[in-house]
Image (cartoon, rainbow, N blue to C red; front, side, top):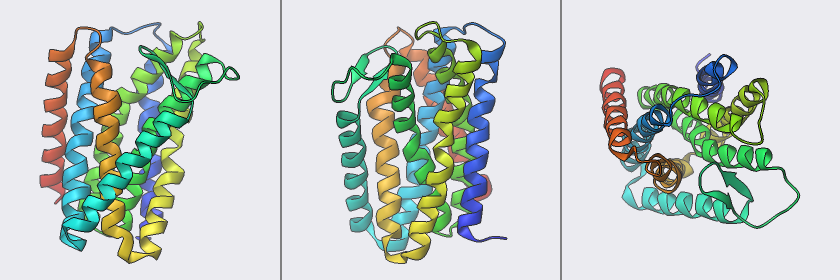
Length: 250
């Protein structure tokens, strides 16, 4: 069945499973070098930047013109920024962000941070399929899935460093944080399938949200431990991979 919502569900399942695949090494290893984690996150950043344009922003402009897409980009940026400021969460290196709270353990604050990070990705996959541009949507889903592998690995090993978390729990945290992409993929596809006029707005929203996450969270994270040059190489490789997918599937 090629209904957009069904396809979005399948794509969301794929991206979620690849996130779990990335976390598998956590079950067998205590640590991985920070250099490799930063290169992996750089790769993921490059994929997300390219995907924001090739699979969301530019197709959205073709569908509805530039103004709705620009409005969506602004809304997506503001929404993610607002959530980041209000919802309490914790990053491994920079620590606590959001409104102060003493009710959550550090581990769960980290889970919230990762979930906020993954939400735009799931929404983007759903919006892509809901727009019924199958080639761009498939390229986007594959790209998000590929970049979820180093993300899942990074989340798993980062979790181990928090409060002496056991390996099985670190894997579970990584898996659950990626699981949010599945319902959001379905939700994104349902919204744009049922309300066609919002497609360019939704594509801009998803693209803007992803770009904000990359700029505000991912790239700074890869530049804090002295590996910025290697992380930048990873970013360029991610861009190349996404552009290649877009050409091959388009």
